[in-house]
Figure 1 (cartoon, rainbow, N blue to C red):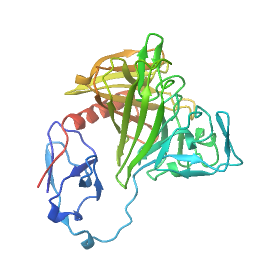
Figure 2 (figure 1 turned 135 degrees about the horizontal axis):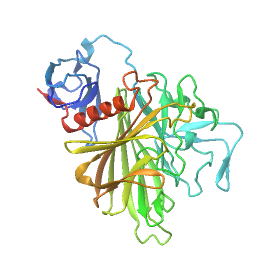
Figure 3 (figure 1 turned 180 degrees about the vertical axis):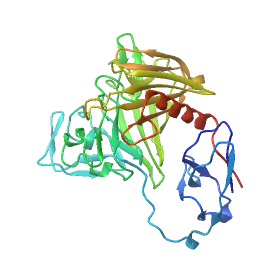
Length: 374
């Protein structure tokens, strides 16, 4: 097999899907990390982690899996949601002695679930690659937070097992780094109204489904039924958000399906004071990003945050009260991406200028993807 990276493409390790002829189903790559998974169309595909210099080609060889030496391959992608057990609801709070949690593949939010209900471990789904971790508040806030990581190992299964405070302090694995406040965090959805950006205060039903959890890729979706901007539900819409993260990369790929097009859907980044703001475009993609001391783990601790968007899907990029906002054109299908970078883990990204170069390289990978020829 021949892997081609266009001359305008990006550099670095990338995970690609390879459709293999049926006769070679189950075979793996001799000279690259690979694994078999089902893609979004329920097709069996081979995932491979490759690094090809822009403008060059790499040859990969398929061999029967049983001819490869058995090595313990590292898990580099993970997604999960865990619910608290052993107690009972008292109003909008879950009361229990101690903290015992059960990981679940599917979950429907009870009507009383809100912020600080102490029912979901770290308050919602979490997902990570070997580079960065994230969590989604699965309540009316519906914001995305950042878990920085000190090493490549999967960390989320241990996070929050002892309660709801310890992960706000930098520990051996990392920590919850972002002050979200009233914002969307990094790349959550909202709706622009005259009163500002509305989160998910008015929604009939919220459901989580884990889709895949393999060595190189983790995916899940959250379905919202009847998301509206007020109690009348006159403008309600059903929304499905699909999240994917791959190994060797902090990027989360987000696909959104809506039951009908709306003209007030936005995403964005928390707008902390004093940050460097970066805007760039390349081909069909753009990015808005921030860089500066916006981590809560220590004074002066720097984070880089970014939202990538398709230029043909976006009407405006503006500054809101709490966020740098990306406003989508009315559509029933949207695609965007988010990432966070922590300089303490990434030696090549230590300044705002280096972060901008890093982001432009990402734009190149999105515009000029690696291709596979058999």
